[in-house]
Length: 204
Image 1 (cartoon, helix red, strand yellow):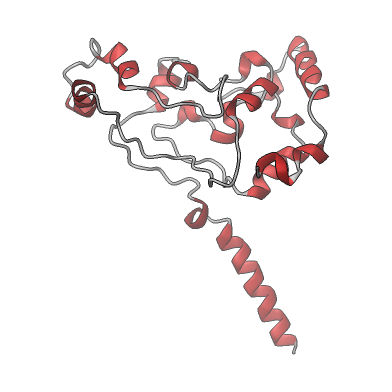
Image 2 (cartoon, one colour):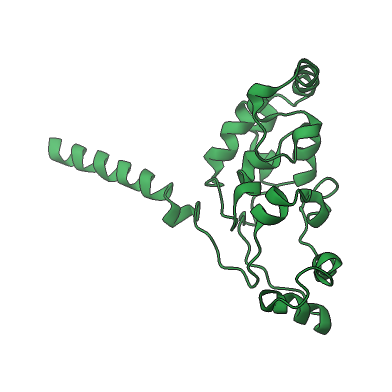
């Protein structure tokens, strides 16, 4: 009888660990894209703002993927003949969108709105990690329900000043008194944890 209980406990523990592993969640696994695009180069080194490519992140539920024209705004002059960028040029010539491999893919039954998170002061890095230092973007968190709920129960640590929302390497310990007041004000206007953790908030 004791051995059955122990075996069941071990099996339960193994299951919870496997369920949270990269094998099941896809976390920390770099995906091959049709173009060798480096966020570290474009955002981290060149300082291109997230919103230049993900232009709808502040206004709609989705962050949006850039049309090829956005790429060509720069690359019709910079690296215009690079063989690495031929898929971009072909997409532009043929007027066919690039089929990017999706990195963060929530299930259809989970509702997520980028704009509401941004407006409340949640920075990109809270969900996506330090993208500005990722040569190839990978899923930095499990995206499992327990991960979402951990923030919805206590969102305050993830709220930052408006000026730092798109700074993926921002250090909260460097917050200024004015920024602290701004964050505190944002926190007072957040919904209660009972509403944020209600099933209907994410499952509609």
